[in-house]
Amino acid sequence: MEQNYTEDDFIKGIGLFGQKQEKKKLQQINAELEQEGFFEQDSKLVSSIQQKGEQDLRKNIGVVSSELEQEGFFKEVHSPKTPIINLSRFVRIGLAAACIILLIWVGRDWLITDSNSNNDNTEIALVDQLYSPHPDLLSESIAKELSESGFGGAPQKEALEGLQKAMVAYNNKDYVASIDQIKTFLALNPKHEFNHLSKFYLAISYMSKGEANEAIPIFEQLKRSNKIDQNDIKWYSALAYQQTQQTPKAQAILKNWQPIGDYKTKKKQLLDILQKESLSK
Image (cartoon, rainbow, N blue to C red; front, side):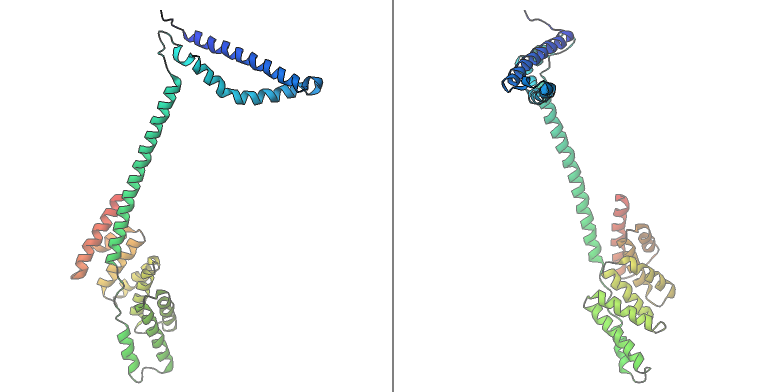
C-alpha cells in the first residue's frame, strides 16, 4: 500500500537528513583535523574548523542535493493536496522552455530589425537613384566671359579663372575642392553676376559631399532671389530636407510644387518614399 506523506513530513525528512549529513561531515572534519595536528594548537582550533567547514560546505551543497534526489525525496514526498513533482525534470523542462521562448523572441526581433533594415536600405537606394548633381551650366558662361576683351582687368580674370577651376573640380566630383574654391570666389566677389549660380553649385557640392545641412540655408536664400530656376531649387531643397530627416518640410515643398517633365516623375517617386518614412516613425 502506497504511503502518503504530508508537507510537514517532507520538511521533517529534509531536516533529519541534513542533520545526519552534518554530523557525518563534522566527524570527518574532526578526524582530519586531528590527523593534521590542529588540536595541538588551541588558539587556532576555532578558525581552522571554520575554514575547513566553509570549504566542505561549498563542495557539498551540490552533493546534498544529489543525494536527496537519489534517495527519492523529490519523487516520493507528496500529500493529498500536493502532487508529486520531479523537481530535477521540472527544472530541465523549464530551462528548455525558457531557452525556446528566448530564441523565438530574439529571432522575432532579428527578423523585424532585418526587415526594417532592408526597407531602409531600399529607400536609401531609391533616393540615391533620384539624386544626381545638377549638370554644369556655369563653365560655358565663364569661358565666354574670359574670351571677351575688356572684362575688367586682371583681378576680374583671376576671379573667373578661380571659379572655372572650381567647376572643373565639381565635374570631376572633387567636391571638397569645388566648395573651397567657390567660397573663395564668393568672398572676393560678393556682387558678381555669377554669384547666384555659384551659390547654387556650392549647395549642390555640399549635398554631393553628404552635407545637406549646409546646403539648406543656401537653397532658402536662392528661393527668395528668383535668380535660379525654381524647379531646380525646389527639387534639390526637398532632397536636402529628406537627407536631413526633415520629412514634413520635404513633403510641404513637393505638395505645393507643380513641376513638368522629368521632375514630375521624380516628385511622385520622392513623395512615395517620404510617405513610407512618415508611416514608419
